[in-house]
Image 1 (cartoon, rainbow, N blue to C red):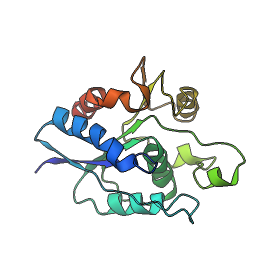
Image 2: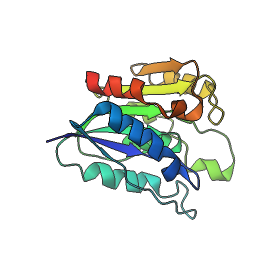
Image 3: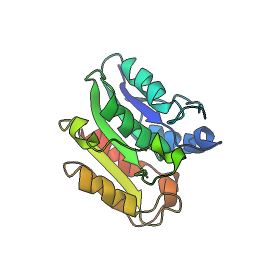
Length: 181
């Protein structure tokens, strides 16, 4: 049986199609002993979190056996939100978060995306958690990584000199960390 990876896409109108390149890179590097499941999330603009935490929760709850979770951008932040707010089965091998926004501000639209103040206390500390962020990310400022580091000091943080928001569509660094578990 292959090791399962669940990849949560980034946001935007073409987020699923755009992140397919990341999924392909990850799958190619990991090889045949891994299966990358890539569900397409839909956005319900009437819901404060676009309905993503519920959809992500269903994906995680549907795991048979164990799985590794990978998220990109909005998907990474919603994965953190889901893991810190929902009771989910303890089937997670590792959590890998790429270009993760740390939502803040008083605007109405951002309120449903923000993490709870005590979110870090609700995350499993026994599950290896990795963050990846490029210094030249043009969509999520590099400073967001510092917010995550301040809240989750037990996690591993990979600062990447260049590669933009999508690490040049090359997830070898993520794959190496996944294979190390």
